[in-house]
Image (cartoon, rainbow, N blue to C red; front, side):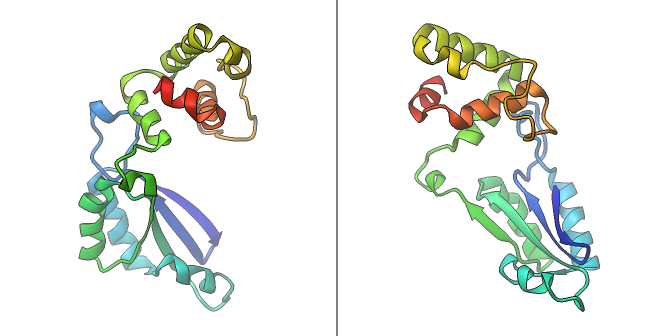
Length: 183
């Protein structure tokens, strides 16, 4: 769960995966279903939960206190199977941001990374990617090699370990053709 404060009176809470943690999906760091329900129960009791579209109108109103919105990124199955019934149970509105490519059956790159990270360490993934570039696309090796000990972008992904941040950064900037071939 991430709380993004607009100010002390008005904030949004964002979720990604809402499912019980499992060894097979250790790379996604989900919010456990029971934790999600506890959070929704708390928010619905202590705050006025409004749709995200309304939240911004309250942010500038000094008289409003304790207003929040709930958002869920990517429109994943676990959100509809696990989160939506809980939201309905508590009568809480939420905004789902759906990645439209997933509607056509395509897995978004960030989710591919999470699946890979559930099976391999980020160090192993970085080593595999570097070996892939070196052997299959040596013309890109120097440009996209993943440094293990210095952040590519010093100001981003500060909560991630260096190798994790760098792997994610490179996957976000390499040509799609390379990323898809690696995945």
